[in-house]
Amino acid sequence: MNSIFKQLLNVKGMVVENVCIVDGPMRPEPVLEVRVRPRAGMLRCSRCGRKRRGYDRGGGVRRWRHQDFGCWRVELVAMMPRVDCPKCGVVVASVPWAEPGSRFTRDFEAECAWLMTVANQKTVSGFLHVAWRTAGQIARRVAGRLRASAPSP
Image (cartoon, rainbow, N blue to C red; front, side):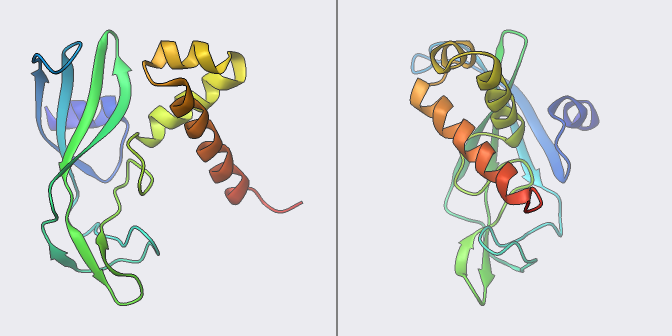
């Protein structure tokens, strides 16, 4: 099951531990919850990106919204360890599926940004079930990443 979900999620450097459907009175619709963890030896500082040894198991569970599977909303859930970086201090380790500080996976952000090129912000926010301000913030983040990675003219 691990390899099937790794291919469906299209995320490298991750181990799928468990998959379940979560439904409850606090959720408007059921969510496909995928519990994941970074592969061993992949701990990196979320600020400078260098490999660092672990400091502790972290302070709790974090969630990232991923692309939907048909009618199912998908969330990645992980316990995030912290690393001890001599340059940055004790910080949460980076994950291969999301940018530091983001509540969305890179694939979700890329989909949102692409949709913003062919539709308006309100339409995209309704289609992805996010606030329209969130859709705009995601598009700006992706554009900034693309600008930073592009060669200087």
